[in-house]
Amino acid sequence: MQTTDESEQIARNFLGAMGIRLEQVNELVGDMSGGERVRVALVKALLQASDLLILDEPTNYLDIPALEALTAYLQTTKQAVVFVSHDAQFVRDVATEVFEISEGSLFKHTN
Image 1 (cartoon, one colour):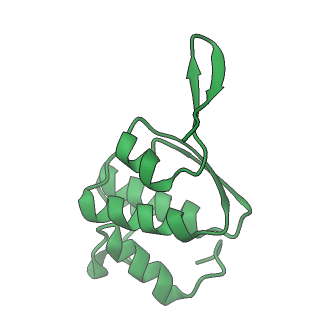
Image 2 (cartoon, rainbow, N blue to C red):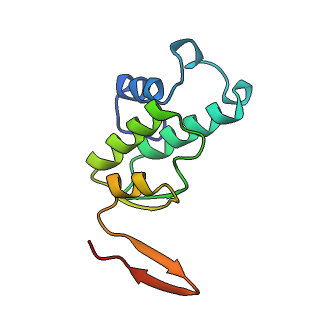
């Protein structure tokens, strides 16, 4: 909550959508599983007040409901988002422009 302008309820809702149960909200992150820690860190990064968000393989460790919550958030955020992903469906659902690095060169995909 120290790094966001969002309400506590929005943060709790997003944590819930990412699979963090209500009884875990006040738990120490260090006591959570690796996957849960990744989800908490992702929610923290997404809800920070910033103009640019950079994500590296954000769909790793996410189950379907968490992936859907992330997709919905990224489809509506006003932040500029740069992400790397090998998840082709996620890229189609979220990206407005796609660039690929191949053989040391950067190529822009056309729709």
